[in-house]
Length: 486
Image 1 (cartoon, helix red, strand yellow):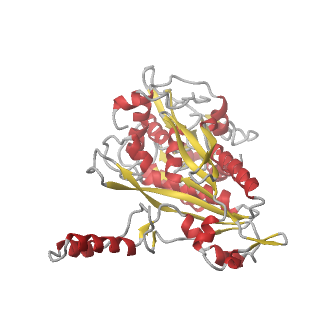
Image 2 (image 1 turned 30 degrees about the vertical axis):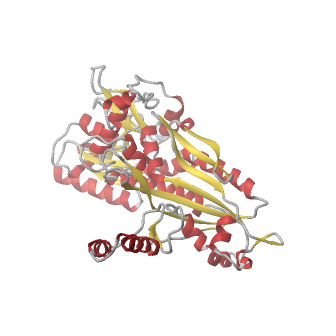
Image 3 (image 1 turned 90 degrees about the vertical axis):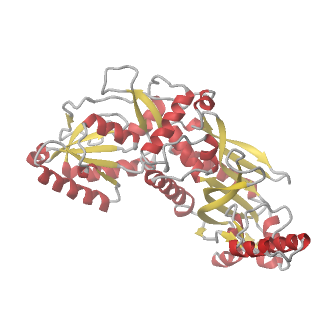
């Protein structure tokens, strides 16, 4: 990504799996669904089965594959900015131009799945909280967080020629001590709201506080900044702070570790690339880290810590009784479990996991490959593309618009290819939509006006089948809901 040489030393990008071709991919006639056949046919099983038992195709060199993925992500607007090469470090630290529209949709879908899994469908009570992006208060010794300082105030101090060197240093130190700092994680905000939310659950333990938000961290980049100057990196974190008794803290840590690992693996083409290991901080507190195996090695995507009661006691000094929660009949100060995931890095992991180079059915040239992002149906930014074939343009466009409105009202995201004015072949459209990770392409033709039949093409299998237009909405909604329950 940063240079071809750096990535040629990487290991192989990912297991490039051969799609299960089950129909014609050359624009020929598609299979028609009979009345007695299931409308799901081979399509409904596509993601789950392809992620387990597909035949491997030719695997590119690591550098080539990584560079191809980044190029696709830029060209298809998962990543924003110019087409200049983005280094691996920039991707991991958040020091890049940000995500494009499809990248934002992917991250939104990932966050929604996290929220549903951790907050919505839990038997135990988990509440949503929101903390400030900056934390007011004095600077503590050893605190390296970025401070929020008024540029005008700083300029006035530096331009005051009557100040001695000692006075200037004193003014600057006082300014830094009294200014707010940008948050590095979401733990502090959850701890601040512990007492209020404890009253909400009638002091019963355990319970959790969840939040998704942007956090900031220092990034050293000697190639682009002067020595000693640090850039600000950003990342979107998903945080669950779990309050439980010390008696059950270890069991809950094991529970959340298994829950989080299974969750990450649920959406993966190659689940084994997600793994976990034990860790320990400098104070001896135990935890776990979840990793994804990128081509260059493992990178952490989520961290789980058993912090004990130290953070709560530090935040609420003096009256310990206000911290007491009920563990059965006992009143105890709870242990704090911090479960913190990096959604930006997790999104990057799924892009690498989903990227495949398979044999191109559109050409006889063996050196050309079909590039496809096989994102899980729940994560794919766009579920279906609607396009027109040959026929009366006005009538076909009206049919497309009507179907698009019906799908959008049902919560299915649609790419309106029928509005495109630049003519492209079907092969070019399919290649474009595969790189955009669009699950299905619906082709509205003159036959649709005559008998209501549309052509449905699958991203994962490249199969084309005929389906009545009245069944499209139900098929897509059932397909996506079935994928959620796998």
